[in-house]
Length: 166
Image (cartoon, rainbow, N blue to C red; front, side, top):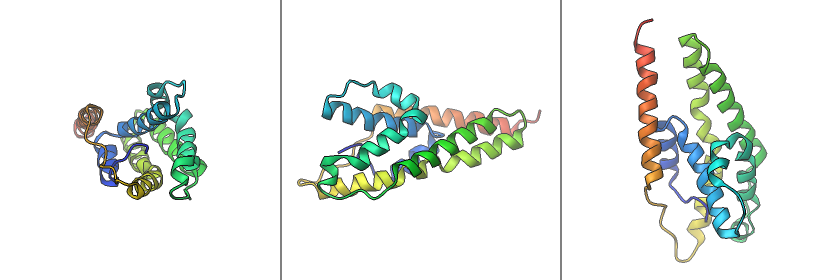
C-alpha cells in the first residue's frame, strides 16, 4: 500500500537528489491512489506542485480506510505538510538571494525537509509489514535513478558555486 520504501532510502534519496525525491514521493503516492481508487487526477502535476498537494496526500494516507483497518494512523497531516511547505519555501526564497552566505543558509534550512515525510513513511511501512504475504519494498526504478542523477548534478553546481571565487 502506497509507496513502500525503507526509511533509509527516503533519507538517502532526499539528500542526494537535493530534495527532488520528495516531489517523486508525492507523485508516487498520488499515483497509487489514482490506480487503486480510479481517481481522475494527474499525479505528475500533483508532485511538481507539491506545496499545493502535500497536505492532500498526507491526509489521504492518514485517513485511508484500508490502512486504518490494519493500524490507526497517528501522525498529523496538517503539521507535517505545514513544516514541509515552510522549509521548502523558505529555502527556495533564500536560495534566490545573490549573497552566497544567504544561499548556503537556504540550503541548510531546506535540507531536513524530508523529515516531514518520515512519520507517514514509517506508518506505510508498518501497515505493509502487517500484510500477508508481507510485500517487498518497492524496487529501485527509473524514477529513482533520474532523481539521483539530477540531484547529483545540482549538488555539483552548488559545490562549484560555493568553491569558485566571485
